Length: 194
Image (cartoon, helix red, strand yellow):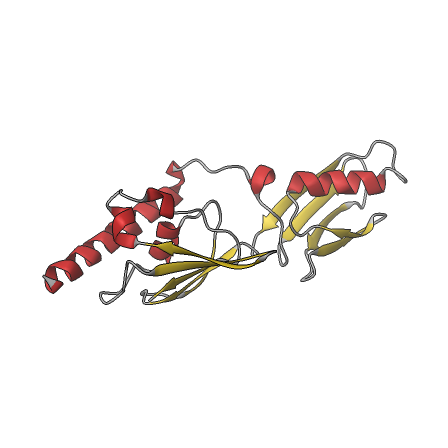
């Protein structure tokens, strides 16, 4: 029985890795970053003001979540979407520029990291380039090892009100019984595989 269980997990891990590679090839529709992606420390932004020479800059978001931009000075970027940051810059710049049109785009995203630790084949930190659920994170980590306690996987998330934990039962999710457990991970989440 143990050998069948190990073989089943190896085959399932291979299937999940194959499906992740297939979905990364562009077959899964991604929500545009400008509508939901929250800027975070370490992200590289391209900010440009239309018809203003010298106001197209690449800006790195500092560890405190703030950026510096000409005429706007210090401005909070961390936790905002590109649209929200654009609106905040417009408010600051309209004192100096009539009707400013500001475009903000994310050139490089490094703040959207999730972590997978424990009994997986490649534990570590991973950058989620779009919506990433728990199964996809486990796939990026190379799948579960044969001796994993797959019904006791935990997702640890820090929130403003404290640290929260959710349970994840791998076997129930892959059998289709508890798909609600396969939550979308947020930046900073840690998946612990015992």
